[in-house]
Amino acid sequence: MNDIAHNLAQVRDKISAATTRCGRAREEVTLLAVSKTKPASAVEEAIAAGQTAFGENYVQEGVEKICHFREKGEKALQWHFIGPLQSNKSRLVAEHFDWCHTVDRLKIAVRLSEQRPTQMPPLNVLIQINISDEQSKSGIALEALGALASEIAALPNLCLRGLMAIPAPEHEYDRQFAVASQMAVAFAQLKTDYPTVDTLSLGMSDDMEAAIAAGSTMVRIGTAIFGARDYSKK
Ligand SMILES: *Cc1c(COP(=O)(O)O)cnc(C)c1O
Image 1 (cartoon, rainbow, N blue to C red):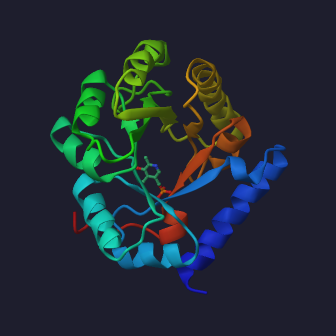
Image 2 (cartoon, protein in one colour; image 1 turned 135 degrees about the vertical axis):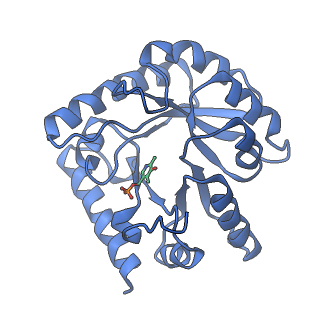
């Protein structure tokens, strides 16, 4: 087994253990493999080990990988855009990705809907919540969720699937769980309002257990699968 296959097996085991511990079914949690900065060859190893959902932070880099695998005839892959999205890059996201996790204003949602090619299925979107209320991070306050959700749900070429957050790093499990639970409450409410909502994108390497215990349905893991990132080329 190569490193990536080995790492993937370990991450899957951790997810299984976490779901078992809190009495949830393993199938309720999807693993998103975050392949930002990693070459297509690394993604290929993950695909060979059965991984199908990949997360990318940089639009151009993500599009290159999507096109690479489309040309190779890989059809079953799902590409998730998880980075900060600027208006001038929205077209590339709308035309290539399957999901966007970082929608946090109506203007970008309208652009994504207008730019989504009509022959493609609607773009799956998550609304990003600034759950730790940090000035530097993107995302909306929970109080603003109701209004933005109803506007996004009305856009023709988007499908509102749920919520995403990047909580501030927190080492204590109880603190991680408290923050994740706030997200879970908002997610449960959104689900009752919109039948398309089924995804809570929450949990990274350090807070995955707490996120899963609170109700996350998608964890985003990069380094533990692909190894440390080298940003010197960026
Ligand atoms: C990079 C990134 C991840 C993965 O982080 P790792 O520490 O490599 O596991 C998850 N979510 C988002 C939004 C990211 O940007």
